[in-house]
Length: 128
Length: 446
Image 1 (cartoon, rainbow over the protein chains, first blue to last red):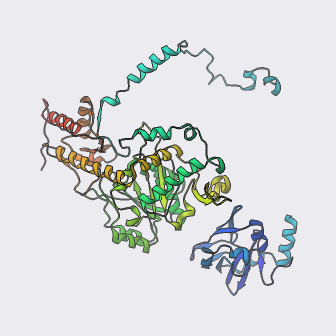
Image 2 (image 1 turned 180 degrees about the horizontal axis):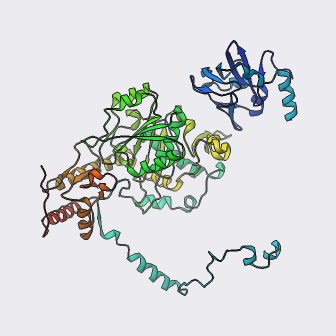
Image 3 (image 1 turned 120 degrees about the vertical axis):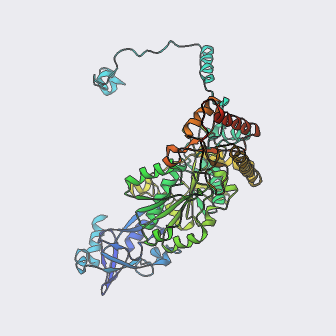
């Protein structure tokens, strides 16, 4: 299954979209499908510093609670507050309205450790 | 079984090193007939002289009247022998009782949600502190010195493990917390929470002043309220009304016996904002597939059997039977009964202070309002006065010098609805004997 273009992925199933030095982060369609109905998302604090692949929150579904790992390091500059009232957006539109947070990227080299859409597809295929 | 596992003998299977093994037969008296055993146990029980004493002890464990209906219900086998209600469909009774306990705690504290209980008030404080640390990401806590010293000691034990620094707020000359430096202290935005107890350990009513609640909010600092005498919640403004984000405390006063070492029953309540950080069990109410009310353990995804080391707390258990007892107590008394009981405590404690304070050499140490407990300054060392009273079969209170060296001449005394005029008269008589006994020196103060 082809992933949306213009996105990079982590092996923890987060996606990231770069726009200058700002990166928007969410979880992949594969991740939301695996988790099932998402009932709560705990997001990082705006202003907090995060490291690449560091813990940056929690996604709770009816089946499990999973940690979020940010695919890029830097400063959290915005979070998707609408998920507090409507966490199901992550299931409905994981690459759009269900985005999680935005990071002001500290090191452009973080990109090099991420997967392209095709590489991510291959990674998922391996997992199955 | 030894044959099945291929061992020749028990000793071969379980080898106990000589250094720690006891090889000689253990000296145990011969078996007794049941009737002889009963005599023996009755004789042993007879050595317990607690009932002969008049008690003014409080300091975190309070004597209150427990109507017989409470034991009649709580001691039923289906409550006494049940286990954690994982299987909701066979545990509706217990789950409903815990749900009602949570409802009572929410009502009494004025907050949105409460858990199924934790071990005791001190554990509740430590767990509340973890919530505040996780909610704010800060690693410092500002705790009033008028919070129960044992609660602070338990908090310190937790704090050591989680690299949490505890700073103290002093108490002022009227027995309330000295909040004068608070605004400045929290202005640096370094504190996860401020911890205040009301009534505090000195019995003094000590809520956070209302103007400071806004200061805390502006600095992102949470307020944790502690209640060691839960009956006070029936008489005083709720912790939520003076700004508490998290209310913790001890529910022993609600029908749970004063016993050496417990068990007691801790409570934790908080706002919806922090619902998912609340530790331990939570019972929720829902509908079954036929539309009937049904009770279930809820939000378990926070707990350690699912989240492992990432759980909100390593507490998975609760004091279900004590919480049940407290729930029955609260239901039996009702709002009116509870208010009446609290008023009675207030009156008895004020009567006690009036009578004791009229004695030469005895006076209230602090001037602020109090509920059912009060600090009395005595002539000389508190320990001497208490030892003298013990000789008169009176447990006069608690020597505050144990935790506060500057209060070595002070006794913390409690009076409840069980404190009678006659008991107060006996105490007053013994105290005046103490000051006039041969060789006594009445302390002269300036």
